[in-house]
Length: 274
Image (cartoon, rainbow, N blue to C red; front, side, top):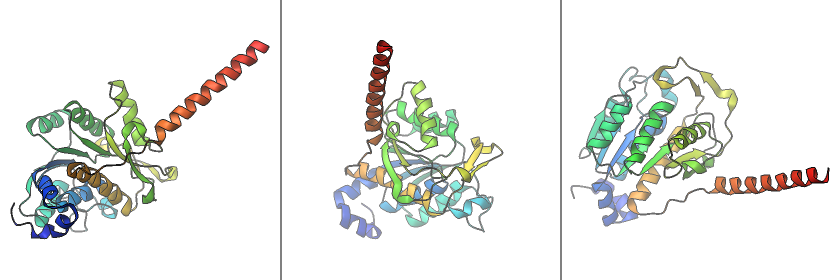
């Protein structure tokens, strides 16, 4: 192991053997916006030895309220380049691959076929590329954590982790579930989401660029909090610590199904009496 004195506090927490697991791991982070930029930094600061980061976007002034690479001095610059410089400044020994492109189906296939990743972190906020990454990673039997919508929400204490198909109160998650079910995927993707009801009044329509037709308002700490939870899922899985998963939606579905059955029986009895 090379000079890891800067990871002394991490070693104190998890031990040398587990720290070595992080050093040997390769994590892919796709999307370097509000969630992904913080998630990537947390992964690097934890001591993961190899990372690949992917983003084809450049910094826009509107990014400055929530994204690490977005400064008044970085407008128009590629997020991937800015984050690569930052991550290497944190850990000069980091084995880093930076890919400056949007994730097309062809790019997803190439990236996930050419390298064996220990974990895939999906921090994309556009439906089509997000779906592409999840499907490709799932079919290759890779461990995945996917960030759902941080927009339109303000309470970080409502952030949870669950199987994507156990999530609730998230419009983005509902779209993902619907499309994934159509191709036979019904479980096996960890998702970070919020149970807080969305502030519908914060919705705005966009010009449709970068696969997005609309966006919700955001506040500085929410995407960062999502990024922190995403990073924690990856790191805890790599270290062998349990990740507690919400199961409330399944229980809710069972209750609703039973209630519907009871209601149907009542209706049938009523018809028989009439």
